[in-house]
Amino acid sequence: MDQIEFTRNYSDLSTNQGFQFEFYCDRCGTGHRTRFQASALGTVTGVLDAANSLFGGLFGQAANLGERARSATWEKAHDDAFQKAMEELKPEFIQCPRCSSWVCRKSCWNNKKGLCKGCAPDLGVEMAAAQASRTVEEIWAHSQMAEEDRAMLKEESWREGVQASCPQCHAPLAAKAKFCPECGAKLQAQQFCKECGNKLEPGAKFCAECGTKA
Image (cartoon, rainbow, N blue to C red):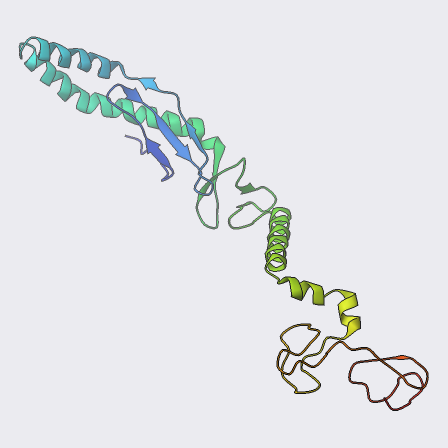
């Protein structure tokens, strides 16, 4: 008897009434199901079983004979149906020479590389996915940023000069403030050069325009 080649990526849905199989992709799970093939032997045995129950065992011996016949004949019919199903659906799948997985040609096979997409991903798809992932990360990072932190990143905030500590008591400042929370000193007071009138930067000792001492 010829050996039957088979793979692991299938389910046997056969019953006493007939044969049916499902084959699916090891990578994405996409599957193909064969059409149900009715079993003539299963139908005959079903009739004998029904007669046996109706007539109180009158046909018990006949039912047992049918059962023994089915154990051999049904298995042969099952093997034939399985072989046919394999030949029918095998073109839809291909085995990767690297990982030995059976994958569907439609979605999980990289024709250019001759490997499954698990071993040789589609670079265009991977790049698009990476870009989308990075964008999502940036959105989350931006949404978690505090309002005062976003304000500090604006150009005008930097021009105003944010102080890290109070010039009077040197207490640390957690954020941009008008007054020191420790000593109450005014932090945002604007100073001008008494000689040329140029606006002085906070903490400047000399005017950047004329050099006069602040």
